[in-house]
Length: 330
Image (cartoon, rainbow, N blue to C red; front, side):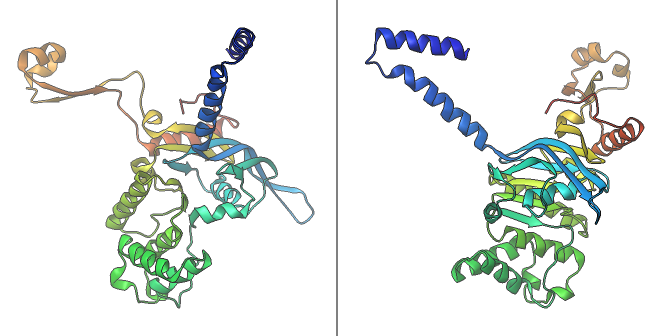
């Protein structure tokens, strides 16, 4: 296709040398390509990480040739059992670790470039906050690290404390906070710089059912604002509720990647949801729907649960090491 376009442009140039229109097409194509590339917030290419002992011998290969993309404005779930490489991946993206091979790109630049961290918010699995500070002082402290003005710090502090539901405890020292309250202020700390990319490690740990629901609602709201979120979690129901796409890792390898609704769909089966269907009509459903006046609510492929899919992939990986042969569309 490209060779035909070049040939056509050469012909046009020979017959109409003063006409500038042929050059407009490649310029537009390049601009469109750059726009598409800018939508990719995170990209890893053959990313691998090997931990070595004191003598330089290979101890653990935590990540093996990871290839994935995270796009702007989505919630991306990173799943896997303990030791699967999730935390290693997050640390590589933050530039806290350096890859053994391959590369990780964030906002189109190498993850080792610390300047990109000004656009990132990070909630680690354990929030390492100063226990003698209260919520307001904590957020003010982190605002200073980002060189925010006093007016901006006060505005963001009040806004975030309200957002995470801690207004009533804003002046209590963090040493008096429960684990769930600590997770809330940890999320507020991760959002203090109004980041474009938010990395979350077990964001719902320690929260009660109401807190979990509120946390998930906040994550969806952040996505709707155009933020990009990457979350690791062992609570698969939470991931299923909020994530647009997921990657499942096991023993450092990518085993599955795709949209949640696509991965959970069971092919070869059809589920009918019918309202006001009489008992007699159950024997001949299709005929009775027309005769009985029942309402067909939906007809689609039923889905399994994310927990069942997760366990199936892990068990299959243990039985047959290596890359999973059968994958679904991303």
